[in-house]
Length: 405
Ligand code: SAM
Ligand code: TMP
Ligand code: ZN
Image 1 (cartoon, protein in one colour):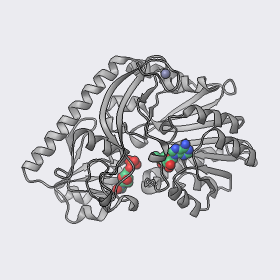
Image 2: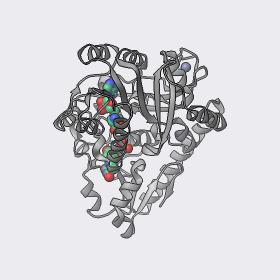
Image 3: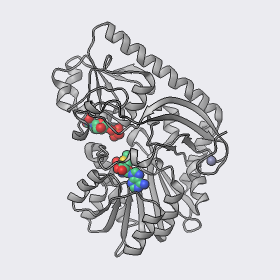
Image 4: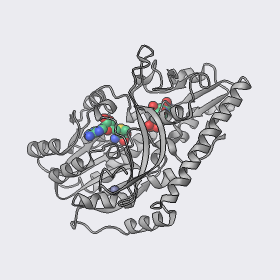
C-alpha cells in the first residue's frame, strides 16, 4: 500500500482520473502532442486524514517561467486580496518595520497592496513572467521556489518576518515539510504563517471533482492541517471559511504554544466529524458521484450536438483539464473556449486540444450554450455576459450536478 507524503501512514486510493496532462501548460497548435501526462489518482490517509495525490508532477513542469495563470484576471479576487491585505496591515503588519513574505505572489494581486502601504515585503514565486508583472507594480519579488534553503537566505538577508502569507499555493507543494521548516526558520517570534487553499469539505459536499488536478497535490481539511502543523512544530490557531474559488479555508498557524487556538478550530473539527469527512465511506460515495456527473455531461453534450446546437466553453481553467480529459470531451463537442488571459489565447487546452479564443469571440455570435468551466467566478461572469442570456443563450454547469440555467 502506498504511504502518506506527510505521516508515512497507509493511504487508500479513492479515485483514478487516469492519464492527465499538466493542467496549466497550454500548447500552441504546433506543440500538440508534446504535453506531459501523468496518472492523476487521489488517496486518503487512514492515519492523519490528509487527502493527497499518489503521483507527483515535477515543480519545474508545473511552474515554468511562462506559467500563464494571472491572479488579477478576476475582479472578485482583486477585491478579496485587497480585503486580506487591509486586515493584515491592521494586525500582524501594524508594528514598526514589519516584514511581509508571500509564497506564490504571482502577478502581485496581494503583494501590491502591502507595498502600497509602505510595508517591507518580499514575494517569492518561480513563475518569472508573472513575477515581472508584480515587479512592474513596484513590488519586490524573489524568483524561485520557497523551501527551507530559500527561507534561510531570506532570513539572513532581511531578518525575520512577522507574517508569511500564501494563497492557493501551499496545497500545490508536495515537499511541504521543507516549506514548514522554512517558515520555522524565517518567522519572527510570535509571527504567523497563514495560508488559504480550496477546502476539502466543500469539494466533497458539492462534488467539485474538477478541483482535483496536478497543482492541487493536497486537499486540505481542518483536521489534516492541524495534524500537519503539529508534525512540523506548529499549531493551527485559527480557521476562517471564505467563499472564493468555490470554498476556501484560511489556516492560521503559529509556532506550537505561542498563541491560543480560537473556538473556530474546534467548531470546524466538529463540523468535519458530522460531515464524516474523516471516514473512508465518504470517499467511496464521492467517487460514485464523480462518475455520474461525467456520464451526465457527456450525454448532454452528445444530445446537443445531435440537435445541431453550438456549444462553447467559458474559462480555460486548470479545472477544465480534469473534466475534459477524464470525460473524453474535445473540439467535436466544444468548438472553442473563451478566456480573458492573453497568455492562453491562440493556444489549445492540454490533452483535449480545444482552441482558446479571446473573450470577444464569445459574442461573435453568441453560441446556443456555454459550458462554464470557471464556475467559481459565475457571479462575475454572468453579470458581465448578461446579454448572452437575454439573447436566449444558456449556461451549462456540471457541478454539483449537471444542469442548465
Ligand atoms: N497567490 C495567487 C492567487 O491566489 O491567485 C497565485 C496562485 S497560483 C495558482 C500558484 C502560484 O504559486 C504560481 O504563481 C506558482 O508559480 C507559485 N508557486 C508554486 N510553487 C511555489 C513555491 N514552492 N514557492 C513559491 N511559489 C510557488
Ligand atoms: P481560475 O478558476 O483558476 O481562477 O481560472 C479562471 C479562468 O477563467 C482564467 O483563465 C481567466 C478566465 N476568466 C475569463 O475568461 N473571464 C472572466 O471574467 C473571469 C473572471 C475569468
Ligand atoms: Zn498521513
